[in-house]
Image 1 (cartoon, rainbow, N blue to C red):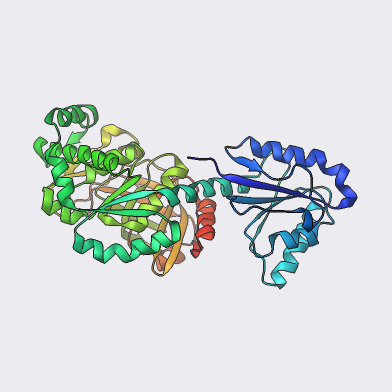
Image 2 (image 1 turned 180 degrees about the horizontal axis):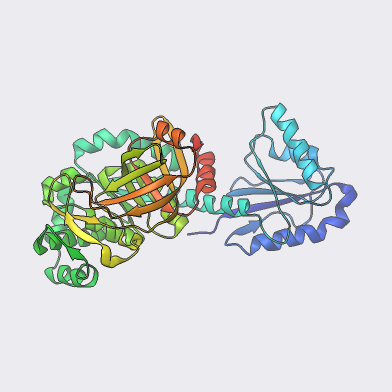
Length: 419
């Protein structure tokens, strides 16, 4: 993936030109320590007619080197999304605040002021750059959707909205094509994968042959991903149950372990979230249903029949068992780690991204009448807001990604609610 392109634009008052060169050099040097391609003038800009801002940048970063530049700054960022880097010297911040006041009065303010020392790029700017990287990835991402033609007609509308918003391409794949590939899988490969990845896990309520069929489907999906050059794959699970008599739960878990997002129930919106959150956290994310609400404790019980094995506190505690709804082989009970996390819901019609910080309290409950991977989380944000706005699946990722998600929403013009 190409590094994000940052257009670094230093500005200053003519009165302070000679005094700001060291500040500009330090700020630019700190920025170049990141994985970015930096362009823009080396000398500070004093007048608007000296600027030619390109259109092909990912982040417009205006460095206010000195005060006395509010009018110039107002002209530069009018109706533009820009990060305005100010520092606690040379009246840098007052100039930026003055420009913001003017532009807000004119309803032309779309930028963000970030205060930080020049020796180290502020965290908000790093987050903006990482966000640009994710949005760029999604623009070129290809997602396979394994489903019947009838089901594709149902979900195609959401797919088209996502494509207009994120420019992600969805490739519908008929189950028949998957079955043809499934039938060609070498039995030796199935045995090898079983002994490499599955043998040490506890198996209950399903037979070995059923688990091996799931491994065969995992190998099949890897082949489909390679054949169609996919970055992620999602499946209309219940139609696949009828077609293969096995679930994609183990395949999804193993794919997510390897860094390729596999998503349940042909959920296109959650696919986008899982790609984003897996990129941010550098580890798998988890798609789940909210199955119980404990209002007094501000707790939610989440459950789904799969989770990446890499999320387990101890892989010896993972259990392969029957799928909840169908009883077919095979689902996974993955006791996921405790810790700080972010829980997110995305819908495209009407558009909304809802996110809250949370804490994974405990998991692995083995409640028999629920999907097999189960975890209790505490919402650290506004519990009432989250519950009133959430719907369908949520995606959980370890770490605090609220600011990144907000920046993604701003870039693609989706309303964002931090609960």
